[in-house]
Image (spheres, rainbow, N blue to C red):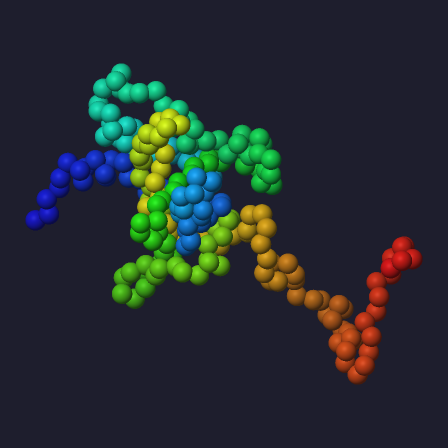
Length: 223
């Protein structure tokens, strides 16, 4: 028989498994060196419209209870509260110096991070024959724009620059592929379509038989 302790119940209350989101700025296989010099695994999550925020807010609330007790009147003032953690992405994106193109009305932004004491668990979408999710180690699988789910833990921090709540990143399950956000090299299959018969007919390699490639005709004489 497995015993359930008070700590187990507290941890469960602070833990939440997310719905599907699109990853942004993922640093999951290798930690990112931050401005404060402390490397961390990090992930920005973009949730589509319809996100149920109640479990997420409940996890942050449970973290506050664990830290400061059940009497809310005794809780200290927070520099970073739930509204700063669970944000309207369309509003945030509009104020960004480098906004992400697209219509993001109704989308929600949440960030989470994890320390480097243990490697972050990143797994694939389906279990293998032994019933285990395969661990992901290929950086090409982890990119901004891909869909995923994550396990998050609400927690409270108390630093010199103030107190606040945030989410710790537990593990990540990679899901559907999608178009990449921002830069990166795209796949030829995404850039081109099959050439039509007219485009292909009679066209030989420019280097076949000593032939020369034709120059493009433009209005500029320099070209």
